[in-house]
Length: 259
Image (cartoon, rainbow, N blue to C red; front, side, top):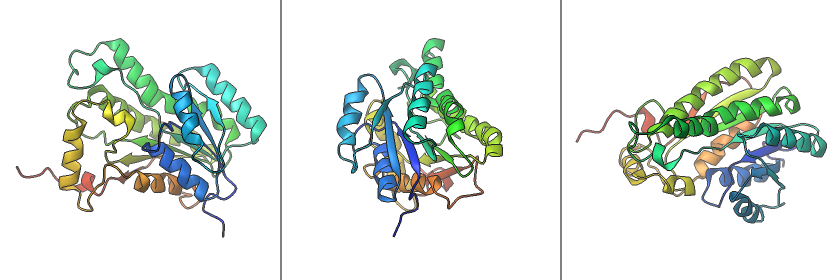
C-alpha cells in the first residue's frame, strides 16, 4: 500500500543530525512515499550530507542559504529541472547570535536582532515566495515553531523571531491561498537538538514540560513532531491553512503550575 505522501516531491531544510526534528520529518516522509531533497550550506553542509546517507534512498543535498536570494533562485531552478514541480516545503530554519539569547534581551543590539528575525522568520517568506511557482494547488508549506505566546527563560530574541514567524505564516496563508497552497506551523515541545544545546537555560524549559504536560513529553523523541509535519504535508488537511498545530504533550493548554 502507498503512504500518505506517495508521489509527492518535498524539500526539507534544516536537517543536521539524527536528533534534529527535520531528520525525523525526512525519514517519515520517505516512509510515506515522498521523494526528497534536502538543503544545507556552509559548515553544516558536510553534516547534512553524512546524515542524508542514513536515508534510503539517499536524497540530494542542495546548497541553500535562505538569506541569499541567489541561492533560493538557484534551488528553484534545480528543483524545476529535477522534478518540474514541488508538493511540499518544510521550513526548519532558525538562528540567533549568542548575544541575542541567554538573558541578554535588554543588551542585544539591532544587528543581532536583525539576523535572528531574517533567518528565523523572514526566511519562511523568502523560501515560499521563491518556490511558489513550482507549487500547485494542494501543495503545502510547513514550518517548525516554538510557542511564542509567552516569554521563556533565556529564549529572548528567538522568542520574538518565533512570534514573527507565526505572523508571517498567517500572511503567507492569505497570499498563497489563491494558488491552493497551504501554509501551517507545528509548535513543538522542546527537543534536545544541536540548536537547543546552544541555548543557555534550555534545561529549565525542558524541565517544565516534563512536569506539566498531561500526556508527558520526551525531549529526546522528535518523532511525534515529525508525524504532525508529514500529516500536514499530505492531502489529509485540504482546508487547513494559517494554523498552528501544537505537538507538545498538551503543555500549551495548561495553566501556570502552582509552586
